[in-house]
Length: 254
Ligand SMILES: NC(=O)c1ccc[n+]([C@@H]2O[C@H](COP(=O)([O-])OP(=O)(O)OC[C@H]3O[C@@H](n4cnc5c(N)ncnc54)[C@H](O)[C@@H]3O)[C@@H](O)[C@H]2O)c1
Image (cartoon, rainbow, N blue to C red; front, side, top):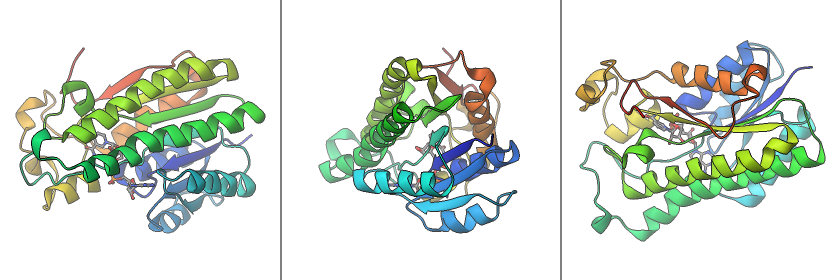
């Protein structure tokens, strides 16, 4: 039976790379994003049944509507890869200090990164409790910034990604009884539009000023995060839950 995968942030660098990887593995993919380009991207994946849907992960009704649409068109979602997120600052300017970070930006970042994670995980839990599927999987994205206290990110991003890590563990404990694993990926710097846009310049290794912090000597590729996600959602990963998989080039070792 084809597994149905919903990827939030599906129009983004890591989300789209993961969609390609999942499609190659034989899954039917629903790309969900604020950005309607997700629909265009979905049409370009290998295979024919993939779809794009609009979602605002910070909005409860939008989350329900997106899950409704995906399940009506494709069937029960077995895999949720929740990758939508925002940084809440520009990286070509110095990291804003806590003393200068405004409440509106804090609320915005938390609404998408922390509340969004809660809303999509809750919706997945409700649906799989009502209609179980084999090998249910949830993968979230935190960040090495949350683990390190940030090497260039603002307080709201770090704290909201910390919330993602804790929520992932809590959900893993609760949802194991339904055969659903819940794991987080904590990437280091990855060459995606988030990094490009935030810098206001082309990214790539030359755009990353802290290369000396990375033992592998380069920033990561979205495909390398996608590969980690592919493992975590595989049937073979059934005994891995509540874990945080570091994909960070050695930026942080525990
Ligand atoms: N790129 C990195 O260096 C890096 C490092 C660590 C963690 N991450 C995390 O990985 C995830 C993916 O990041 P990326 O680098 O691919 O960035 P990206 O900006 O390319 O992708 C993020 C996507 O999320 C979507 N999005 C934003 N707000 C949304 C909302 N309210 N509802 C639905 N979709 C929304 C955007 O439209 C975008 O397509 C993010 O959660 C990010 O925090 C990225």
